[in-house]
Every structure is written in C-alpha cells, then in structure tokens.
Length: 324
Image 1: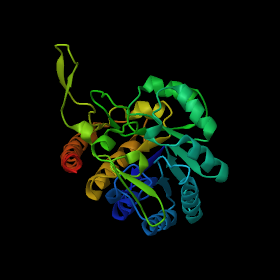
Image 2 (image 1 turned 60 degrees about the vertical axis):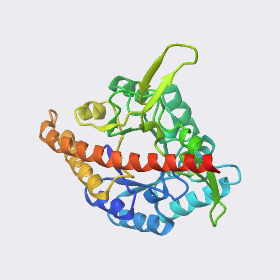
Image 3 (image 1 turned 60 degrees about the horizontal axis):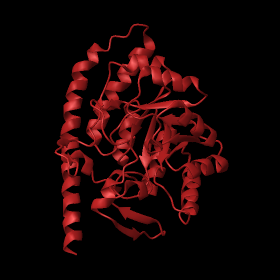
Image 4 (image 1 turned 90 degrees about the horizontal axis):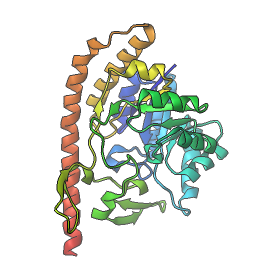
C-alpha cells in the first residue's frame, strides 16, 4: 500500500494533514533541517506531533537533513535517539555518514534519503540502500521507465514528490550553495549547534536567489542569454496511476513553507485521487482536474510571496556586507 506523506511546517499544519488523510507527516527540527526556523518545529512541538499521530495510527518522519560537522555528530545522534524514543518511525537524512550511523544505532527506524543526496540513477540507489536507506526520494522528476529500472535494482522504497519541474533547470535540488555567497553569518545556539545563515545545508535558510532572473555571458565572446537558474515545480495529477503501477511506495506532498490551509486542501485532493486509483482498474481522475488547477494557482501565489521575501532578504544582506 502506498504511503502518502505530508508536511508539518507548523504544529497546526502537522495535525491538519493527519486529520485530512495523510498516512504520515514529516517535520523539520529547528537548525537541523533545510528550511528556515519559521518552517520547523521545536522539541515540544515534535513530541506533541508524535503523540497526536500515534493516537491516530499514523506515523511521523523527522527531517534532520543538514550536514553535521564532526563536533555536531554527537548532538545529531542524541536528537535522533530522543525522537525515536518518543515514537518517531523514521528520519530524512542527507549526510551519508549520518545515515549509516543512524541505521547502526537504530536499525528498527526507517531512513529516508533527503533530496540533498541528488540521486540520478539506479547505482546511486543501490549505494544508498547499502548504507541503510529504506526509502530513496527521487528528484522531480524521473520518468516512469526510470522508476521501474530503479525499483527493479533492489529492495528499497521509492519516494516521489507530488510536483514536477515543467522546464528543467540548471541546479540539482539539494546541491546548491548559492545563498551562502550572498549571506554568510554563523551563530551558536544554547546547545552549541553551529548555524550558518544563508546555507540550508548547515541549518540556515535558503534565500532562493536562483528564482530571480539572471544574465549569462562569456568574457570576450559576443554571447549573452537571460536565464532562470531553477524553475519552480508544479503540482501534478495525470501521471499518478502510472507512477503507482511502476512501484512507487511513498508519495510526498510538498509545502512545509506554505500555509496550513493550502497544504490541507492539497492533501484532501490527493487523498481522494489516490483512493480512487487504488479502488479501480480504470480510475477517472478528470474529476479532480479543476480543483487541482485552482490549487496550482494558490501555490504559485504563495510561492511568489515567499520568493520575493527571501530575495529581498538576500539583497539586504549583500548590501550589509558591502557596507561593512
């Protein structure tokens, strides 16, 4: 049975998606996941979410997908063991050493690779499975045939995002460090965790500088081209039956940095769509098309507001550094 996993960027969102039909919720830890603190949960909220999910027969995945330094690994392990002790059933991890360490210490939990692992082929999947990955998240997005090949390469759960990149891009999701070139500040929290503002990989916030327009030119050559470094994904629906038939085990709803109301409505539609597919040999998904089109518009509106806010922040930071 395919698992639908939805985001919990706030405690309200986490509880809402579980109520609306998600089988699992994923929540980020402040300073330890690839989102800003406003889209992550503190320990009290994480424990409340775990208790709420378990009482309803649902699951929680905790996102700890930054890249911990050697001095931070003991803190990392202590946190993972704490959340597992509370009842978290899995963790989303980018760092390869941390992935193996978690599986060695906690063999009973599910390890999900994060998008930062940058999977491109079935040999990547085989390598990550050998490190202890139970689920591998594929970049948005590979073809159905590629998913079949990866699924056939070994016994590992396949996780896909429920959105796609319409026109490609120049950046592999999870592998970018552009923000840190615009703003690089660091601070230690009360536990000694090192935060790098501007670097999502180290617990800071991605400033979305790739979302603005750029001019590409080559020195001494009469060549200039406007370009967008990374295009934003869009929600999708029509391909869903083929993806499930190809062996996808986990459907990941995006949106930790969106509003709880929007994410709630997205989960509602996808829950009904997935149930329709599972209950019929010839599912008719056209009944969901108009709803999803409205959701796409709302998604784009919220995304634009978020990107504009982060871009202004990047500009302010670069001016601050220039003036210093």
